[in-house]
Image (cartoon, rainbow, N blue to C red):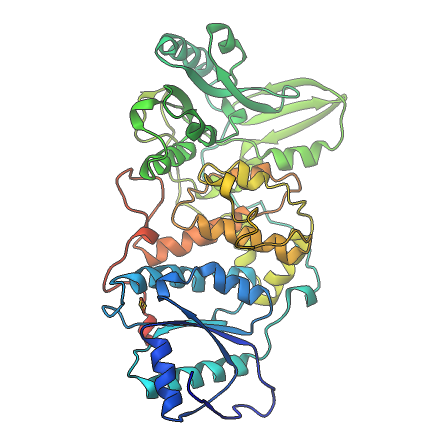
Length: 489
Ligand code: FES
């Protein structure tokens, strides 16, 4: 690039680490024009030239901020001027989602901006780089994840999940078995739940014969989202038992052409809530035997090693039940019972509400303490119904080398950022990631926050509700209703 004349922007801070991703066709040319004109501008910015702003993966920015950048600027061609027609339109949606997502990690969103500068706009480039550099200097050096003191915070699960919650109709099991028995000859397999290591814990159950039906469990023990298994059965006719939330994953898999509707038979179960087994296990602690297990209409009562424990569903529902919008699958092939109507309006799930109430530095400290427990088992990824490229997962890739094998908490949180951003506009909030986490990290809150951002930016878009809908990050509008990027000049 032609010579840039430096300007000492701030006497208090020495130069900060600011990274710029500039589109080759416009903004890089604009920076060059400013340089040729010998425009005075700050020298903190380190420029990476990219073919188009559409080439900028939001993870580039997140990785830079995680690894010590004090600020990141992306600049491309003005809308309608992209050399590749629409690269900047796609970029705008992705970058706006990232900007709204950063605060949940404890990162100030003002550390990242994106804008448009054409090749002839040397003067505008000078203003952009000066303003952004001043903005970052006003914020000062970015707080380091390593420097924050771990903050151990307990989630207040006392918020009331949406009523009515309970253990469901005890008579339902026999009619479900009968319905599956009749349909089974037409199917290769029906996926449900059965008893696992003891009567309290269930595991997925692959029903191929009438004898297998005897082991079926439902009610508050219908815990796993079985849609996770569907992409593995391509070309087979599979029946699957789904709760309202699980059915959204099926719809999302259909949206992405990962399964075929004619290959899947949906048995819709009415749901009145399930048990959050993480919290149940915490209460039970270590035990040898479950000696008795009873359910009344509201509570599961367990006797473990002679000690009685009561688990009312209204107090032991997982966080996804707080924002439930559908107690029964919408587009099922067979309805097995009647859904209860939800009373009240969906609430902010408790873990997300706790993060909302924290300052940016508290959130960073919270994630530091929470992610310190992560053992990098990737159960969150493997149980996610929408995480379908696990053989080519970027966390395993060495080319490009997105993540190191280090057990630093920063690296572990960065994997959660990758997972969340790859699920943006696709995650249905089924909570399998958090359910399968062996150390109980509330990672679902990251996905729930991202889903909230998607709803706010894209007119209430809900993944998994319309099999024909195009996910928002796969499309664009020339004029976006809720994105006002041109207000930052
Ligand atoms: Fe410049 Fe696409 S070529 S933004």
